[in-house]
Length: 433
Image (cartoon, rainbow, N blue to C red; front, side, top):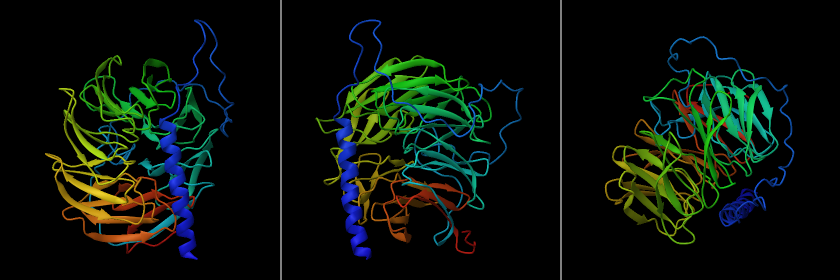
């Protein structure tokens, strides 16, 4: 029986990747025929289960963010999208709980306020109690939610394939505001403070940046969703923007990497990365003036964002890259369609080690405590030794794992195509069903 399941899975995986590739080749959205003409109406959006709330009144200043309030608040953990988690992680785990949804969970979970926030292809955004795995709330959208949520200001910002970015209360799931685009939103939003410095996640201040399949990157006020600026590109945006030093770095299906001024959306650099198939379906990992990104042609690149040049571009076998890279001080790790997790020296792209799995890797790896955590379309969740790529542990979930893991306090949280969200922890812990 398992053999037939895996054959079916491989066919569905190929279909999903072909669909992703086709989306990068789509034509631009229809535009008004003349100035002042109305754009085509968007499809109706299904209402959230709770009454629409007015925008929250700005509260009095809050106390500093409590330690551990938001240990993994967004996709890849930090605004620079490096995929590095703090703390310790063991090498032997048991399943603590699993939480059912109504569709495949390709969204990457985030963790804040003792809750797991994650989307599902059933169209819902879920808040799950981290300790018990019990549902806290669920909020419906009008389309599949493959984007990772973003936690900031005690709110959840999440895009849906119904073309809308939602701002929800992290406590209740109630709608605060929503922003409509003209295309699907498949990647996570990013948060940036209004001024210099890292900012505080317990305030309503800041900016929200999100890309859409309408070919635009949007910068919105976090407080009320008002648009600050928008940047048109030449094709769909399928990755989360990376933020550092007042710059926004992202790639898209127009085969280019953009470096943008956060303050006003001015393009500082637009850097083509290859030929017609050089789509960039994932996020860049940013460290100072260096950005690392892989494209659909199977090339891993280091980009000098200040100089606007590609320092090096290394082919990764016959791999078509779908996941975002993890970036340490010495290494860059990325998986792709060849089913291999590639570890390279970030100085020159030299091979350090490769780890083969039994299916394409769409799950973006996370590095923590000298280990690498990721999933594969072969249905397994893996923990490897960072130094040499040696397998320390794996668990067979039975269906594809496209969700990127969140790692907090020695626990691993990840979604699966079987429709469940899973939590794993040290072997001494007990499972909750």
